[in-house]
Image (cartoon, rainbow, N blue to C red; front, side):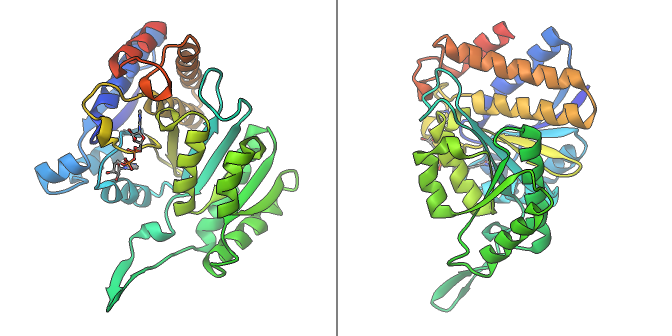
Length: 337
Ligand code: NAI
């Protein structure tokens, strides 16, 4: 049995959390893998009700769990997810983008993953005013850059596909910060002679994600570029509603959709729960490897194939060209698991 902490979040968060709970309960009933779920509050609603976007009870419950699932939160995201990533040292943000049959992807041969440094860059929140100006400190260290580079090369090795790592930066302009990041990645690349290493400026990468996305394998980049490029890569393979993410540290991991709270469609039962459900798949992979539990890995694979087999039949939510509601789509998945 795995203890799972679940932040239900804001906007569409509660709707897709219900979908996740339903799928986790079905996995227990039909596939005999038990998840003990603790629902937790964080985000805009928590701030309004308790005065804290990330209440202490939520932090304590997360620390006592085996893994955390987090639905999106709203305007207080920086006080929730950015804090959790740093507090729990979840240094690798893994965002896969793969084209599946019958999805509105740009091409059918895209299979890439963005490995985003998750603890530094402009996201440390060190901003202040000086007279007429606003200043933000951009922190990029050798240790964190080498750590994420190593993670990226190990990922390319394990994927065993194109065996390529693309380091994305803008060192022609930010010579010191991005220059340090590029050099750290170049240094680490020397330990992986079997992996092709290339560098790309972030503007060129944004263009190439549209022009030739099939050329990418593993992209390693800093926090802000990774945030922006992963929304783009998600859209390239069909949309934010299909995009999962993992925040991984040495001892703990948190899984969440790439997307935000989507207030524009909240409360309408039309959000696509797939990105959150595919985040459960990533959680099963991580728990399975960590605990040497092949059944957990198989359950994750089964969940992923169930989602894509369903989409293949034409049963889809609105964002990817169908007309199913969140709850109807979830029911189809739990019936088919
Ligand atoms: P968003 O990702 O919530 O939405 C962008 C667009 O994608 C919207 O049109 C939305 O309807 C659509 N979309 C997103 N998820 C979808 C799904 N599952 N199914 C169907 N359509 C979907 O980005 P936005 O609107 O910029 O941000 C909304 C709020 O979310 C903001 O308050 C922001 O701070 C927060 N946010 C939180 C994040 C987190 O908790 N990690 C990450 C990103 C944003």
